[in-house]
Every structure is written in C-alpha cells, then in structure tokens.
Length: 415
Ligand code: AMP
Ligand code: MG
Image 1: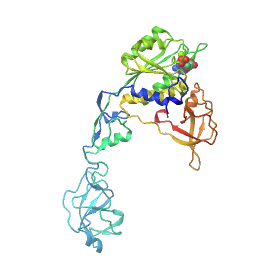
Image 2: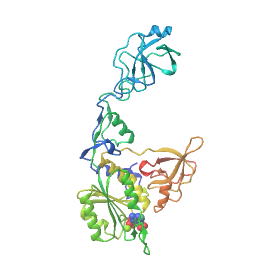
Image 3: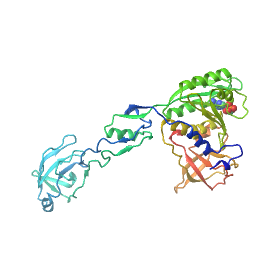
Image 4: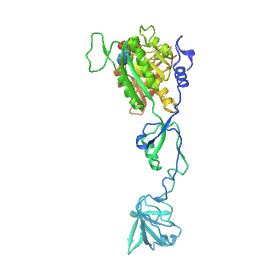
C-alpha cells in the first residue's frame, strides 16, 4: 500500500512501519548466557553443530542386533543365531560379532560394530540360548543412524533467531551449554496525564485509572527486555522534562503514552522537541492515528496515543517490530489469511483499519470471523475479547456480512 491511498496529510501505515524500521539501530553488544537462561533471547551468531546427533548408530527397539548379510542362511532356515553379548544404553558391546551371532540390545543402545539390523523382541523366541525369528526380519531395520537428526557442522540455528523452548532442547542435544545472544534492551515506560491514577488509589472527580503502562509493561516482559517503570508523569513541563531526561539516560528505548494528539495543550511535544528529534506522525490507521517516533540523545522514542486501544495497537503494530529489530530479530510481516466475516463491518475509506474480531473455524472447517462490535478506541475489554484483527485496507469501504476479509491472528505477544 502506498501513501497515495491514504487520506490527505496522513502517512500510510506500511510507510510508517518502514520508516520506523529504517531508523532504529540493530544491536551491537552480545553476551554469553547459559542455555537455561536463553529462552526468548536472540542469537548473536549462527549455531554450527559441533557433533553428530545422535552421536552413533543406535537401536530404535528392544530386541537383538545382528549382521543381516552374514546371517542370511540362519534367517532363511531359521536355524537360530547364537546370543553372544549385550548392548545396553550407556553400556555398549565392545566385541566383534560373526556370522550366526547376535547381541541382546536395548532402545538407545549403541549398535555393535558389524551389526546393521535390529529385530524387535516381540518377533523372536529364545530357545536353548539360540535366537529364532517368529517373523522374518528386514535387513537394516530398527536402526537410528548417526547424525540422522543433525550432522556435524550443520547450521542448526541462524543469527537473529529468537530462541524457543524447543531450541533450548536442540542446543542441549548438541552439548552446547552457553550461547551468544544479543544483550538485553532496557525500555523505560511512562504515562502522561493529570487525570491518571494508579489502581489502588482513590479517584478524584474527573480522574480515571490508567491502564496503558500496566499493559505495556506486561507486553514488554513478554518481549524479554529490562523495564524501567517511570510511573505517571503529570502534565507539567518540569516533571515531563525530568522524566524524559532520566529515561533517556537509563534506557535504550523510551515509551510514553498520551499527549501526542493534535492541538494537545500539554508539554510533551515541546519537551520532546527540545530533547531530541521527534516526529509527530498522523498515521492512516485506525485505531492509532497519532503516534510520535524519533530519537532522544541516547535512545529511541515511541510516543503512543493515550486512548488504551490505540496505545496497545500502535505498540503491537509499530513499536514492537522496532523493539524486535533493536533486539536483533529479523523482521517478519505478520501472517494474514482470508476468512468469511459473519458481521457487517463499518468503515470509511482513508485509513487502514485493525478491527477487533474473533476468528474461529466452522464445523465444516471454514475460517470465519466475527467482529467484537463497537470499535471505539477506549473500549479496551474488546481488545482482550478478540483473538485477531480484521485488517481492512485504506481504500476499503464497509463490508457486508458474508464477504471475505483478511484476518491477522494475534501473535503470542497478544495472547
Ligand atoms: P491523550 O492522548 O493524552 O489526549 O489521551 C487520550 C485519551 O486517553 C484520554 O481519554 C485519556 O484520559 C486517555 N489516556 C491517556 N493516557 C492513558 C493511560 N495511561 N491509561 C488509560 N487511558 C489513558
Ligand atoms: Mg493527556
């Protein structure tokens, strides 16, 4: 989508995201951490396997190992194989086997040299110390090959990858105890507004409980950053100046909410203009039109709108990709797919809509999506009730029930 399709004076969402990503730095510092502490961290280099996984051929079954070529005659006549030793997990058989011989073997035990086949014990019978087959064995079966999961020197994980629980297991399987990841970001969070009170405090006439800082801090915890909570800052020039200066000194990223709308009679803009290079964008997106982005002396600044849904949607759609780039992650567009809208959706052309909706699958397996109803930017509970955004392009008008729409399911961050 280009700027041409947005309402005049508004910046297209895709352009805003691109400009933001072009203007945030990739990380420079890395550190080594124990794999136990690496969940959610971003790899600062490729991981090359120092070993084969598994390290040796081993048995996939409890049974008997033998060499299929040397035992053809015994197999064909079922005359029996002599059992000459055993190989248990962690206690391999170290001798040799010859024609007509077999080894008792357990799952995971190293295959004895010269053996290529395992027969499962359920398909055998032992009589007078001789192994007989009750079902003809298949040559080379029931053996897990050295390196069948990972080969020596394979590139297993790539720089810029965020480590999952499975990755931690894979790293352990490679014998890697410590891993190089990018150093964590510190993110400062503050809310501005004289009307804001924290939960637990009494409300004076005209006050509201503030929610943005709480939700944003919870989201930042999921993003694995260090958090500096600067609380609620009054609409007072000195207080705002001091808060932004402190945030800029201590953090890599500063996030504020409130005070970025047009014609706002507060000091946020004035202070930010004095302290850095901040652009006040009017983005062709709904919710979330006003959004400030730029640089303070030492940090990147995201100024979210005050309305709770706008604050969280811009945090999710714009600030998060910026933070993730600063963490070293490679940007990936969020997946979208078509689903049938069961609701009529109100929309006027000019802005890209992220409408809150519930995605589900009908009994026949069709993807269907239902709006959560009113899309007001103060209705925070509906953002929680939804599991997806219906993404309607800027030029799109209202949608009738039954039409196909693009749906973007919430990522793990929003769930
Ligand atoms: P503002 O952008 O400061 O004009 O705020 C827009 C709307 O969002 C107003 O109704 C504010 O009361 C509300 N608001 C601002 N900050 C917060 C916050 N941290 N939590 C909840 N609502 C807020
Ligand atoms: Mg305000």
